[in-house]
Image 1 (cartoon, rainbow, N blue to C red):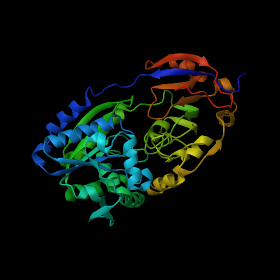
Image 2 (image 1 turned 45 degrees about the horizontal axis):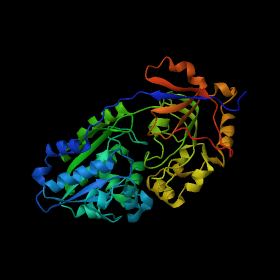
Image 3 (image 1 turned 135 degrees about the horizontal axis):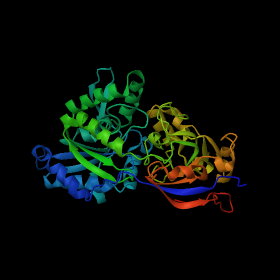
Image 4 (image 1 turned 135 degrees about the vertical axis):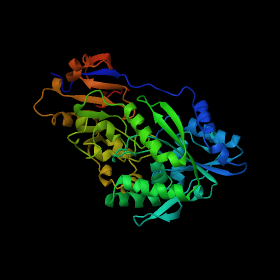
Length: 420
């Protein structure tokens, strides 16, 4: 009998709504907004860009830049990403560069700073911070993807409103707001702070991005400042409906090749792995229910930030070697999620990790162990599944087998041969 279960490859069918032309979609949305009536020739326009791996983000931002220039405005870009990039101005600019957002590619200046100005006192009793460079602009365009948050649940989760707090508040704001959330609630703090920012800062427009289940741009929508909250509620419902899922809702082990901040704010999307409320177990009403997770490495774009490794029960030694402890520590402390930085049991080879994991599946023969293997939690249209799932595929019209079961393959050093 094999030491491990045989695995087959399955392809999933998701909502594939997508934007045909990014520049055309951006131009259409912005021309239909109030922006032209607000921006006069020579006025400066700050455009916020975050740290998530948003599909086509460079093309989207360039299209915004070009439209602002067509109005005679002078655009510039500000990194809006809390404590990411190691919590430094240089690190945040470099992070944007890895997404293709550079001065040369965008045709405008990137002004990166961790400095903020205090624009108000929130009713809860703390300072409201705003990016110093953005505060000097005549107008600010807030650009971000709308999606379910990895830790908080509500009518507003991750998107334009959050960008007004955590993104444009930089590390100074992110620290304060995450602390305040411990005493109040995510919903209260996001509405309180965003309300102050909208009242006191020159927010001219929001540009919301939705993605489909294949990590493609599904929609781009201009949102007027006074409609940010109401529109974001509607857009979150659309984003949630398009969100992908793992092919099966229970597993003994999920193998994830890469985690990183470009994949999710939590390194791996807790909405996908079923760990939104607790790092290591799904809530009773939460799916999927994954008994254990094995994280094999970090993405290049995360630059050593291993936030989220603490959600896994196992990791590969290479991930530990790739990890930047300082950047990871800063991000997890700032976000109030210290356990996300905890390093799990790790081994120098894949075979050793899998040998340990299979002992934790209970009194089950290897052929009956339920394993899934994905490249990351953003790209799950094709997943490797153990043979125990084989009979369930026929019951699922959205699943297609693209490769029959075969044994896991290792190289001479006991490392898995890559399949994605």
